[in-house]
Structures are given as C-alpha cells and as structure tokens.
Figure 1 (cartoon, rainbow, N blue to C red):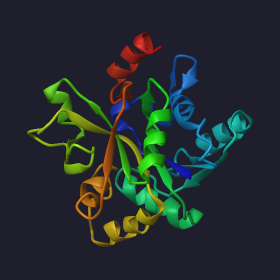
Figure 2: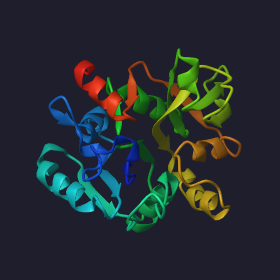
Figure 3: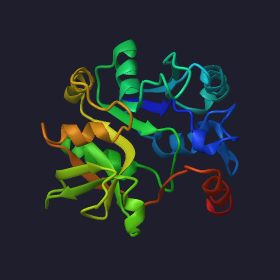
Length: 245
C-alpha cells in the first residue's frame, strides 16, 4: 500500500500564519500537524511509501522537512511539486492525487489523507476494516452539530456499512455521519481517478470523488471512534493549541 498526503493547498483562511509556511508544518503542541497525522498511520506494515504532494511555493520547505525527519519513519517519504503557484492555477485535491498516481506510477492499494487533519487516536481499526473487506473505505464520524455537518460530505449507510447516499457540503444534511478527509482505495479503483477528471468533474475537494464513485461500485464507511479536527481559521488554531493533548 502507498500513501498520498495532500499538502498543495494555500490555506488562505489561516493568513498570516500560512503566508510563508504550509499549513501542514504549523505546530500543535510539540509536533507539526503533519507529524501528528503520520503518527496515526505509519505503524501500518502495509504502507511502504509516503508521497506528499506540494505546490511550488512550499515545495522546498516540505522537502527540507522530509529530509530532516526521514530517519524517524520506516517508510520512504517522497515530496512532489505539482508546479502550481496560487489558488487560481491549483490542480485541486483530486487533480493532485492523479498527478502523483501518474508520476509515481502507483499500482497498489492507496491511502489518501489531507495533511492538515489532527486525529486523536491511531487508524489501526480503520486499516483492519479495509483488510477484512478489500473495498474502498471512507473514514467517517458522527457530528452532533447540525451546522457543522454542512461543511462535510454527509453519508447514508445500509446495515452493512455500505454507502447508499453521499452529498458533499449539503444545505440540508440527511444524517449525522460525516466523511473525514482520509480514504483507502483498492488498487482496481485507481484508474477511475483519470476517468473522473476526464469527464470534467470537480477536481477540488477530495470528497467529490467518493460522491461520484459510490454510484459506480461498492464503497464502505468506517466509523472512527476518535476525534478528527480540520484547523480552518486562526481562531480555531489558537483554540486547538490550548486543548489538544
């Protein structure tokens, strides 16, 4: 299994913190956000490579970070430059996944994660779930706040945890089950990323791909028992610094 970490965004809502630094390299506690993410999955023996996709502005910083920490991880870490320079010409998350798939010639099961998510417990049960079914698997959780649900992809599941409805950022969420920005895709699904882009679908948010995918093949959901936090604003960043353990 390979991992792709999405770190090519510009995080303009976090300015001035992210004007000259990628969001993934901001610190929470004694670690960078990206390091917290790696802690959640690098124990998995199946993962042998970690591909981090950056934009041109932050490529050097992420490459320097990867060189500095390479001895801390069993997996090889490769940083890619998608050559974009602003929000205006960015490839989008799904475009970046396809960029790495093609350039790294990945032909394996794939774990995809946003580089800016904080996960409170390891993803051990999530990977175990995937190995049990070998089916595309979304990491999900229950959101009690109805307004917060509008910022996520919201799912309906059948009795066997299969996705029967998925809507990205709905105005009227149908359930409290939200997809987080962590995904496992089976090897046979990878060619569909190119098909998705060639059809002219939205390349931006990573949640749009499973929204399209579940109508074509079986997609399952795993309910995560921990907390997943996406730091979107300076206020939220300052608050999480006080509360994250």
